[in-house]
Amino acid sequence: MTGPVLLEICVDTADGLDIAATCGADRIELCASLGIGGLTPSLGMMRLAAAIKCPTRVMIRPRQGDFTYSPAELAMMRHDIDAVADIGLEGVVLGANLENGELDAAALAELTTHAKAAGLKVTLHRSFDLVPDPLAALALARSLGIDSILTSGCAMSAIEGTDVIAQLVEAVRTQPGNPIEIMAGVGVSYRTVGEILRRTGVPAVHGSCSLVDTQATGDTVRFGFAVPGHRRTDVTLVTQLRQALSQDADNAVGAK
Image (cartoon, rainbow, N blue to C red; front, side, top):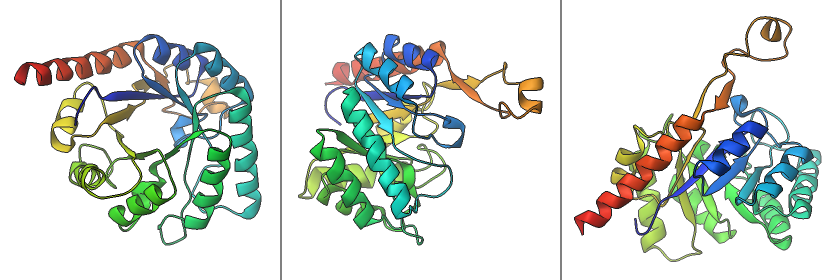
């Protein structure tokens, strides 16, 4: 790892967007419904993000569930990519898999080419963590010109997947191919980020920095307007993660 580590915060509310932008996020992943891994947000949310001037990549995911998409769903995704470009945001976050878990090369080529033609950056989201061969999937992503991969190292959390993440970082560093950013996500907090960085050398980390929303209780849950366990972006957790990254960078400089 060289240079400062990029901090991406994923948000699904207007309040979360403001917190991420003002508390030190270098980049925002904009979603709806983070409780199910994130879906494509509304045009209104995209316009709010454009107004805050923090680099923002938008989730392009038309439904919950798997990442094996029909032609109609791929068409929806292309239209949503167009909306992101029209609003002027930095990029999109997407993924597509075959039924066996491998990346869907044809679908990803179609979506990535569409996004790149509109001048957008592309992050491959955690559909990557379903693949049977992470290094082969990395090679495919690089060949398609994808800019970033968000991964927990094919594990349930980044701290559990550090061996795979480290292999990906090393492959990017040593093997020929298009440059690509490996970004560690899932369970990244001020408590874990230092160990994740030390084990992997990853250049970017991703977190939700969220707490259970205590307002999503009672009648809102009983009538089906909210799900139990819905989470909200927390200003303290974002600030603590930013400070932990800054402290880690200071320690690295001091050790030289």
